Length: 532
Figure 1 (tube, rainbow, N blue to C red):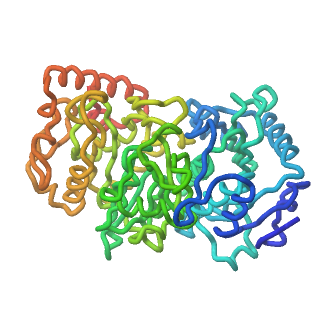
Figure 2 (cartoon, one colour; figure 1 turned 135 degrees about the horizontal axis):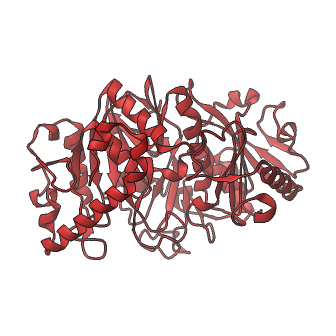
Figure 3 (spheres, rainbow, N blue to C red; figure 1 turned 90 degrees about the vertical axis):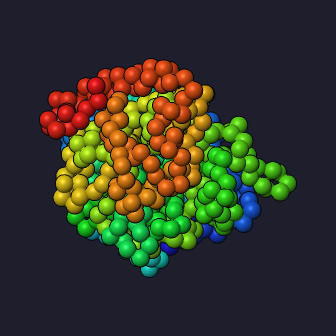
């Protein structure tokens, strides 16, 4: 039975998905929360937030993500980073999933990926869980209600957590599966309740499609100066490095917190909402994000709470350190209504250095920027992926390797071309450790990071004195307003400076070893910027 608002010529039956029970199309937030509560999927929290746990999967499962090896993508996918699935395996998976779905209730949202209508795609999200429908309704962009009457999807995503894949029959790794089929214009997700797989599947899709149009897809947050959308900044970084926190600056206008494109017209957000980490979130340091945790419809994922008062515990990570909240962009008071901005004036590459070696900020040349973009050095933060329980130093190319279907050089060359065409000042910002490595030192003070970013974005930091870092070759400011000078020289923050030197040498070698894989694909100026 069809319920809700949908193009009468584009129901699931019209896509060959038949035999389901009730299908709820494009329900709005109150109806989705009502359905989720009736189905026992979660709990109503303070302010009408929806509290949910996701079972054993509290983070992404990148090893279970597959791309179907069809003729149209065989020569363009980065197969070393994307596990192949056969067309036969996918068709068996699709048939078995549809069979599993028969007779059951499903929820459908017809949404848009991309704020720039010239480059957006229509996505149909079919979910087994009502709260997943609520989540993705926040995360992607919602068409006007009247536009649903003739909505046609470019791509369809089906998410069925209760379905268990068969590795032998479906040509996958485990019972959990994320299968992308560009030829069929379809993504199938099974065996995980973690909601982030929904948004990341669409992000990966755009990451593949947009470079063909000369558009740089970016795993970044973005904002612009209030009243001046031309003065834009983008913040690259993996989960846990501060993208959401640092871009949600009350003094600037938020474009988006996670995924953007850089076209000939400027930057545009892929999404309609934010997916923020809530561990140790506090009202003083991050008031706007904190406020969303008690607003109607915000999805609170894997947080411990008081059963009686429904008060959230922002410090208890017993379920996961990857606890999150998902909310629409309009819950941030200074969010851009258009979700578009000019060409980036500043590019910030965020890293979480668990070695405690890198300075809190450094200025990069364009060649150094491409080097650090391809390197993508950071630390995987606890909980973001399955099995990560403490920070792990890692190199994730383009600051988002799990979401990159194409080879890294395709994105690196696009970034370099955009910087050359439009100009941008590039910065490397360390939000990780200082005064020692993880377990000895302490996390970089957020106030210091904010102060450094403020002076970088307003141009004043670029006018100060810089020193050349002896280990990494980039320029580091000697002083900055509101920041202790000792913090700008990480060696001085260590009690044992010989230990710092040993740690720095170790990290330099890691950079050098990692970058060898890119040497055959890059130009001489980038090679000359390589750390060795």
